[in-house]
Length: 262
Image 1: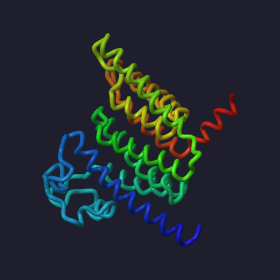
Image 2 (image 1 turned 30 degrees about the horizontal axis):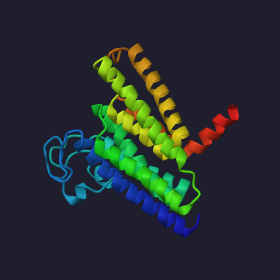
Image 3 (image 1 turned 60 degrees about the horizontal axis):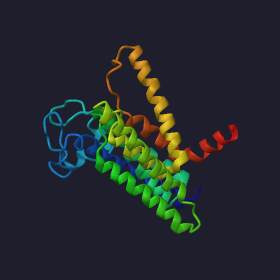
């Protein structure tokens, strides 16, 4: 790794941290149907409007010792964790894909998926605006690869998107029509189809498969521990998002391993 690689890596980290800091705004405001512009960043406990030096990602949290300057109540450590992970994910995206369309798209997508997972975990919903943004990134990635390589095989990605969207829309509407309840949300359907577009049908299938397995295992454990009831719904998005993030890095490795077993 030469000096230029280090400089670009540092830029990826800084931009990733800043974008993750903005994703904290999305995580808090979108589920509460608040404007992303007004009011300015403020303490959720006392509404103290944050000054510029209280808004510096990571450093402000450390400088303020995790407490509001005005009311001195603790600030959720989630803000710090999300910002740190944003920098880490962006650096990993650069190390894996380099300075490329795939690298930039992966860095942004990882932070978006983290936000989607956290929102669905806390609020049982996936904001459509985040899904549209993730879909747009998947399209940019696909088009970018086609431009760089005119013989790029894009058909598996279109199949992944179309097949998953059609199948899971059907699976969504069957219980809605006949049982008058949702099996899973439309946000999940959209996320499934985006996984197919981003990773192609095989990678998307693995995201859905492993995400379902992890979700089922955790649900069984929580029911056994009597933390939730069998009737209590659980957000599917966090587990799909987690596996999606892993597959962005290791899709080809997983597929090669599974193929070797067949």
